[in-house]
Amino acid sequence: MLGHRGCRLTITYPEILDMQVTAIITAACNMTKQGVKVLPEIMIPLVIDTKELKILETRARQVADAIIEKSGVKVSYMIGTMIEVPRAALLADRIAEVAEFFSFGTNDLTQMTLGLSRDDAGKFLPDYVDEKKTGIFKADPFQSLDQDGVGMLVRMGIEKGRSTRARLKVGICGEHGGDPASVKFCHRVGMNYVSSSPFRVPISRLAAAQAVIEDKMAASKAKAAPAAKRGRPAKAAAEKKTTRAATTRKSAVATPVKRSPGRPKGSTKKAK
Image (cartoon, rainbow, N blue to C red; front, side, top):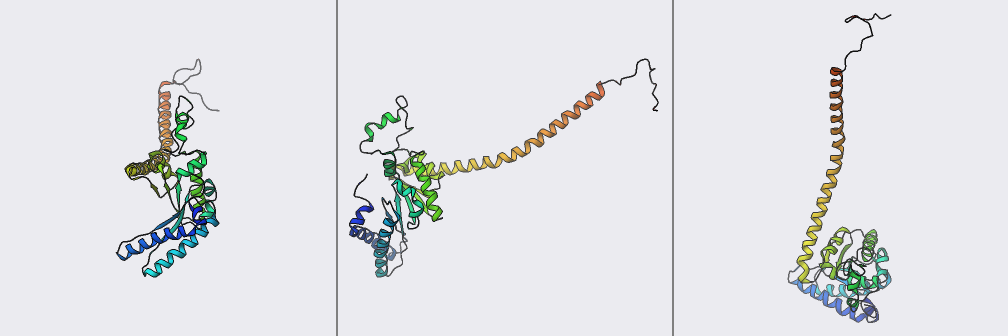
């Protein structure tokens, strides 16, 4: 989870970055020559600072552009990052100055936010999930995204990132990409895609479709509510007016004309 890995490794040993970018872009050039349209996305993991990402982004572009120029074909590519560290989510607006896309690595982001390791959390997490014991978590946070805690960082990261780069492409990469509740959360916060293991792709697609349908149904209800609200007072006023008219007619028929005591029937009093 921690330690000398991810982009930290390529800061120390930049030749590893060169090797990986060379493999990606060379393959893209070869496929382009064969008539296959490709758009490589080079994702730099475990970034914690804008300067760190800028150093690696600059080197990656130097390597990539040299290969593309030598191949004689035109290949477009993007360079982005994985948001896996809480600091990266907090500084997402700055990181988006360099990154062309975000992919939230929610496996590591969950570990670092909760201070839990997937390697040994299984020993005690059942007690955290069991309603009869504690019920601290509604579900295993490594299976279904902790929307209150980790989800807040995800939402914040997206909002901050798009405040800098409005059309920032955002997705998720991790076990949560195959969990229906997590996929619907990703839809609500405005992600463009989810990534999951192959056998969970059908679940992801179904959950994404359900999220869209639920959105449309909610929008239809919201649109219908004001119309119904506007129509209700008019109907109520009409009913009230009808009732009042009926009551008046009833009073006119049922109430006798009062006469002064001792005055003969049919006589009238002259006005002075």
